[in-house]
Length: 115
Length: 107
Image 1 (cartoon, rainbow over the protein chains, first blue to last red):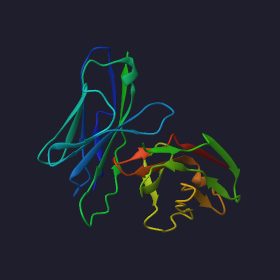
Image 2: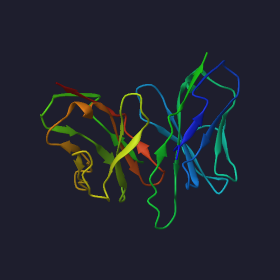
Image 3: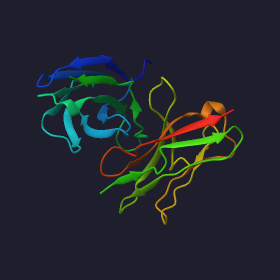
């Protein structure tokens, strides 16, 4: 089991551009959560997807959007990039629901630099 | 609002010394508390969750609801414990993290 995989590893964009980050969950997991980790900070929750729908959302603007596919993989899209969007973006997968451990397993992250 | 506070950015201890990484939280209900660890060049991984009440790699953490704390402890630090440690709370949203504490164990 490869665990949670994210692509690409690194990305450089310029202000105003759009970016798409990808995540494949751990085998058997049905829920994907995205986090933003700025330098020197802990991860901050962006949103969570379950059954192809956004189930919960943190305090992020609408420029941040996502998608979950039938195979449970997910994408994070950020429009109109700002310098402040430069961060490590982490994907976490879990198996949610009654009786599940609901433990989040993290990917290695995508490092986004906005110039 | 949910908040997790880790007051120390950096904690340096000698090998064999006791370790205590502090974590305080604010939440009005009954949250679930976690410790995640990130070793050098590795991904974030779960170390402990309070409902398991287990010891992992010699680390333990007890939830103190009166003091709203979930401090991480180990009686004898090892060099391989050097890493970044994050305390996290799960309540209204999946996980709320503290800013992390870097533990450096000196030989």
